[in-house]
Image (tube, rainbow, N blue to C red):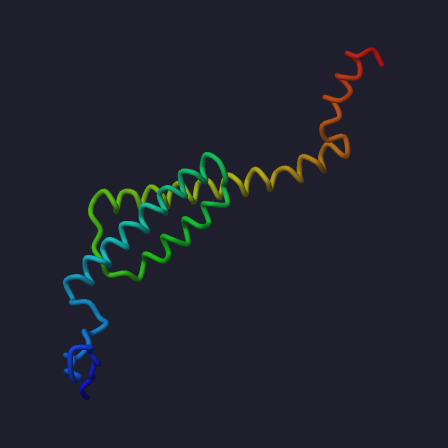
Length: 129
């Protein structure tokens, strides 16, 4: 099917067919590897920030690593090491948080409703009450 474009200079002239929407295979593989590297970088950064600042980011990092699994793009040595380190950081951080927040209720049950009361009692005694 020919497409015609009207021009101010004269009659319509035929247009060549539109370019295909899919990039060539070589460009697609470069884009795929760049995307994989970006996912690895984000997972690594989220794991480190989750370890230091905000532990729920470790779940985001694990999700990014899970998204990376079905890709058949080979990773370099540095990216592979980042993946492994991010995975280990995520698992250790999540287990530590579960352990810490899992032990808090047991501590509360063991010591009763006076959780934090020795500090308050010491301060009240120091103030002369």
